[in-house]
Image 1 (cartoon, rainbow, N blue to C red):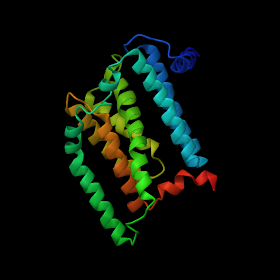
Image 2 (tube, helix red, strand yellow; image 1 turned 90 degrees about the vertical axis):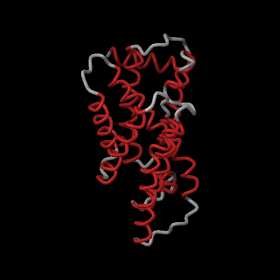
Image 3 (cartoon, rainbow, N blue to C red; image 1 turned 135 degrees about the vertical axis):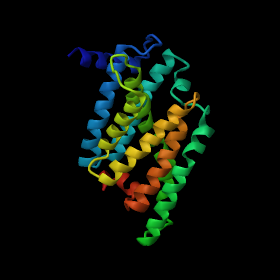
Image 4 (cartoon, one colour; image 1 turned 30 degrees about the vertical axis):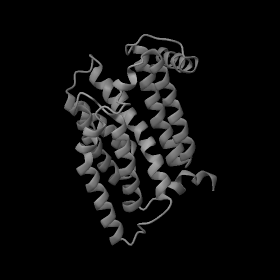
Length: 235
């Protein structure tokens, strides 16, 4: 019950903006792990079962924005440390550009072969919205999961092992689509390599590329209309 009490207390502090120490404490870790578990559980309930995608995405984004703001008010440099800056943006984009072009080109070719309409106005709002959702997904996977695995002294694991575990967890969340499970596993490994490659780490670039790739893959290959899915619960 103690971890649950710590998570509850920490979540309350998010809204009260009570100051804590600048270091990552056990209380930070308890809250982060609890938030991750909640995010994953609600994904299967609200998105996959109830089709409440708009509610889920909005709620999860607000939840983690609250936590990010709380950490920022206590440690001003945390946003830069977490990659919410332009430092390293260009290097990260260039490193992942071949993968982005490969995904984009392959998706278009498959779409043309399957007679999928290339021009659809519903893609445009998704191209603007998905990078934001991709940013929060990468924040959870890289900063919270991968970061905790690497930083915890009691976890005796190599960096390569931490990358593999993080990518595997991201893959599991995309069940039951085995295509997406395999694809995001590879994608997350590349993202983590890009994240670890430079001193100036950049999360914004990863969120942007995640959003673009997610949009074209899901529409052109999986044939999913994300704009319609977003508001499916209202129909």
